[in-house]
Length: 196
Image 1 (tube, rainbow, N blue to C red):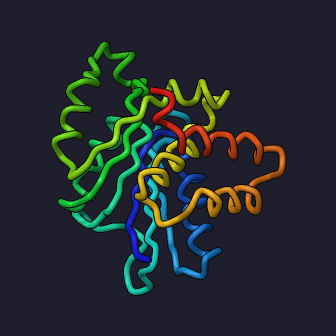
Image 2 (tube, rainbow, N blue to C red):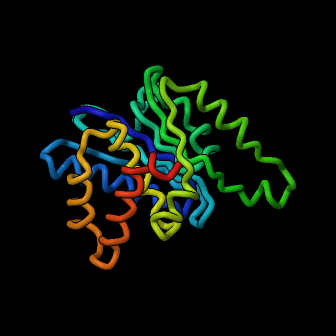
């Protein structure tokens, strides 16, 4: 089992937690994993990028350009910002709902999500677009987008784990009061095709 996965989003979307769930799941299966984060502003809305490298002991924690097998983009523009890390045969899972940066809102700058999504589609071997807004509504909370996206990745066979593997990590590693919420979110993501 060897995979390099990059997760890109903004503060408040749970990017770091999602990367920790992936790494913990690998380690629970006795597979070496390491992760690292690059966090922008220390507040909601800043860029957050997490690298997870599974099965490679002799590599740096950060995925080099052109080497990621998978990018999970919680926010479209953040996925574009990191697209150079994706390998030519790499795959994308993208939440199509943007988080408009404060700087764009205040400055009156435009955010053309359709152009961004088209660019992403043309930049990957395979791009899976997910209506995150619809899925968080089904899960009952906007705070669950991160685990929803993991469910999509598992369903599509882009992470080397089963749904049960991730559910076990959620049960073992998260505070008990968050287990039911995140378990439901994983199921919503896994069954995302039902919400189209």
